[in-house]
Length: 509
Image 1 (tube, rainbow, N blue to C red):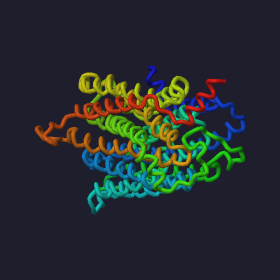
Image 2: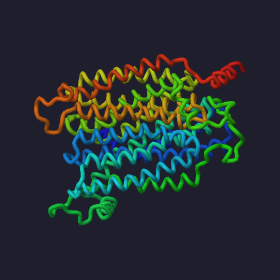
Image 3: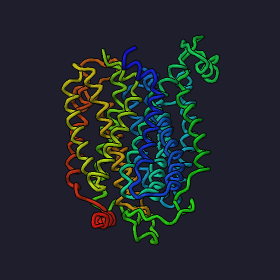
Image 4: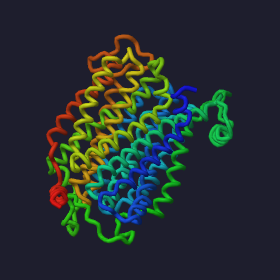
């Protein structure tokens, strides 16, 4: 058995070890010397909240896995349009959901997200069943776009809810590491979506064989399912299973989560963010929105978020399709274990930028974001140069782009927006930044889906007078990495005033 087999044949064990390392790092990082009970109770708070968010990712990116399984039933153009519509709705939903979660709290928000997404995944499963069975009597793109957009509307409650709860429980000097935790939860969710999702697809294929779990899935999802007398793949299972898992975590969220330390019988906790000294002020919806749209700094943070969404999902979404369409000799393990690789390197990226932000740059978020944008700029250029000459090089470059982009997302959406928005407006500010991240995802999804070759395309086909070529995949992302780098350098020295005063008081002791 070679080294790669040793790693990937025990992927679930390695992910469990990564999660254990994340938890260990959480308890090890205690710069404010919290009591053991506070640290434990905060863990009991964020862990089920975070795992719910991870499985929401499984109920979001299962569409990507189903695209490959459906083959020509869903083309790249159709998939790109469906995903773009969903992410566009996700992005603009924050104009409603951000202020709402600031009013109702993160606990209610995550429960709304989980129940809504679970129902939508059941409906997507039914739609996939009708598609595979040839019983769909309406336009497939319209049907999938509608349900996926509804799913993404409920999904948009997830990120703002986890960040809303975080804002009350984590001090600014701890939020870099929480940003790393947030990035780790995103990465674990991507693993669930791609690797667990692909495993579900494999186990529900018509002619597959396996053990008791295979037999159970076949009994539940594939018994007596025939088209023209022949058994078909039960692709719809990749939507039903995440729905059931998400509902399990809803029960734990309802039982365990507390929105603030005070609700868990701890004294009031000043986190020294932009809300310090302003907690008594009641903010209207318009006040909350002005926190973002009237702030040049928040708009620049959102712009970095938009660029990271373009190259994060530009690789997460399309490498999986590229590797399925363009054979990658010697690099098959990247596609076969895409979720595992994204998980591990996403965790590395999140913790690297979080640690650097808190320990090297005194909780400034822009410097490590700038370094990561520079890395993406180099990597996308390298990908364009070696796209068809080095499958292994493309695989590693893709993984490293996701590593860098997860770090940027966790810093911008999960941390910087919270610092400058403050506890009172954290869901609105982080939501709109995260919304811009997914607006970027919608932009890349549509354009890359239409710039790359059609399945069985005829020679000479064009889009916007450009030849349809896979080289447009990395080339489309490259200028956005440069833009992100420019903006991050522009806000290099920015800190909330309360954080600056806290840092000065600590350094003077």
